[in-house]
Amino acid sequence: MAKRSNDMPLSEAINKMLHSYHLADRVQLADLKNNWEKLFGKTMSKYSKPISLEKGQLKIYVEQAPLKMQINYNKEKVMTIINDYFKIKVVSSVQII
Image (cartoon, rainbow, N blue to C red; front, side, top):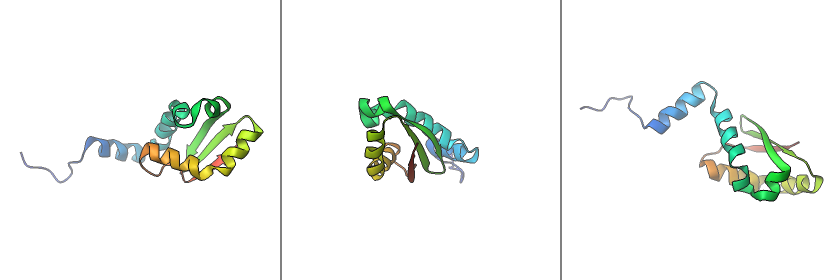
């Protein structure tokens, strides 16, 4: 059987569909919420949680001031951990609430 020009791997087709329906951010945010403790540990997951992810901007709600300061100083590391987890650049900026 001849390969058609529009054949692509299933994962690529799903990614194109998610982006065309503007659902990619929602799916990635849900995945991030489910794996927050795995990525950042029990202490950080107990006092913080991702709130929204829109156009590369991640908003994180943090309950304690010392943890806010720590995350604020380590924004680059937070972005690196998340982007490494997804294996693509999902987060380009972090805002702490």
